[in-house]
Image 1: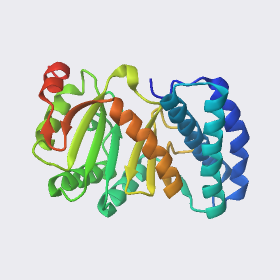
Image 2: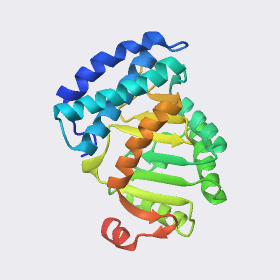
Image 3: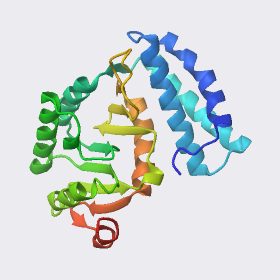
Length: 249
């Protein structure tokens, strides 16, 4: 399973790497600690999963890769990070949707369709903007959606909406494969991480946004690994009839 890596490997690497927040400008301690912590953990998990090893050789290789990532981030000062509340999330997602030119990779891990949850003006704008991007067909869009009984009707609607549009792909993840972080990628330098737990009311924020080529590459690796493990329903506009019949009936 994605991310199913021993804590004995991940935690020591995090302990080594978290103090690097002090090298960055314009980032508060909380943002940087969470940001690099998540990035490093996911990076380690993906590489170890790919290599299927918790051997000394595998860990050494991952440490070198993480050190290379940190050097890019800390020396290049190329990270802009922020924590956002739910309205801030939708506001930023709208902006990124409108500005995207090369790719949009989205994840939806809630057990019910978006309309089932608390409405807001920012959320309505985001859903309208996403529908517009899909209808325009100007940017490749991939979408990962959690497969639940409650989401099946909505998924059938998405299949019909995506079918026949070569820039659109839709895949589903079963309950047993839901990752701990929901990743959204825009172009090559923007990442939005959705915290799947409830909002932290003390901070008024729950999601993390990065504008960084280095961290985007990390989460691109993560997204690709999850997407490959998912079941496709629509691939580049073509319906995957066997999976649709098996999973959405």
